[in-house]
Length: 129
Image 1 (tube, rainbow, N blue to C red):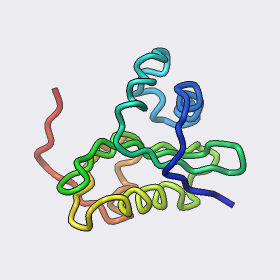
Image 2: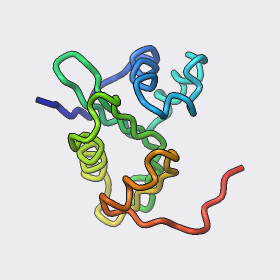
Image 3: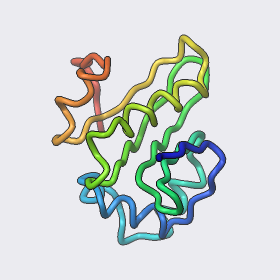
């Protein structure tokens, strides 16, 4: 059984270990524990998924809670994928926001087909610098 939590303080090492179990780990600074610590410290929302004492997923977001929420990381351990954990992490995140608040994200290349499946629409004019 998976338990979803909104009150867990993760250590940088716990988060790095989860990221290493996902394709997201290749695009995050997992060799820089100070940067990961700051990423966790300054996130406005962190939703975690647990199987017993084992961290199996997390959603990390920066938000104003009213208008927009940037879902920076959606990480589910590869061995736990395709069980609805990512979808529930997003649902739990959404429950923390005003009803009209939009969730915005940049998809990992491997997940491009996942997000339309769970109700996201692609936006043609996002920019990154």
